[in-house]
Image (cartoon, rainbow, N blue to C red; front, side, top):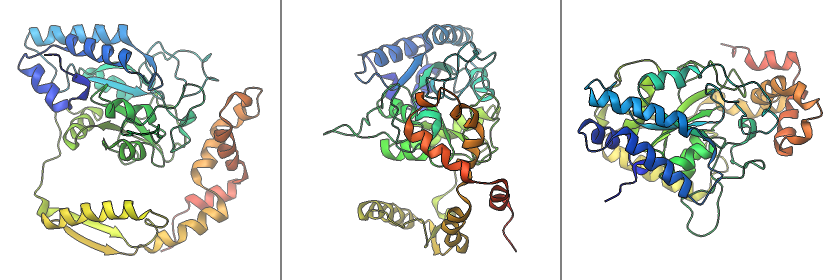
Length: 355
């Protein structure tokens, strides 16, 4: 019986490998076959099959010799088109960067997961320059949300291909980035787990930025356990330091202001249903207002969002060049908003709040 390895959790695949029920080569071959047969060709921008098969063969040799690198050895992973892969150009979901020089080395986190034995299968599609939470890309197509059963629906962005590649059962895990929701949105839209870590938790070397003060990284996968395992390897740890705690020790604070403004009733009902189940299991739930949230809309209206200011600073020369017309016009409009933010405005945004 053939198995869809891409639709399995990392934990399940790791168990199969550890007990010799399959091999990294068999997994990699089946994953590429599934990707090639998948009808939506906009999920991946490029595949790294030659590299992946070499890595799979090396992993298989380690298993045969009894020296596997750990629980992630032989596990396939897809990378958002922001992560440097040695010998490839990082295009950031755009076409204007195609003539840039190829990366001389893997991004820091790519290298760390390679050291853990993970196999890079390719680069996933994304919103151009990671500047959209919808997931639309006019250059490479927009991945269709595999959860939809009636009409094509958006995947969420900007890590659109990453979310779809996992939800569609093509890979067990894909790496995304998150500046203002780019992991959390596609994870929610596609019904999978997305972990957006605190800024600075991982090395950012070799990751194409959107807003350097806000950018973070994290995996999209099938379970919290999978995310914990990948998180540890991204920090160079041999094993996770996080321990499972009883639900009774879980403390959740729910903001009463701001975060539910404009939310649809169905979304609120689903959220409250999840909170009720957690409370019934023993979690401690409290609700309170966060005064700082009330001032955020006024702060953004007065000075402009930090993300647009930093995005414009990054792309201002490109927007002034003859290549500006090759960029998604929605991304251009959004990025140009940062031109309005003066240096004084930016300093005011980042200034510490008064005591």
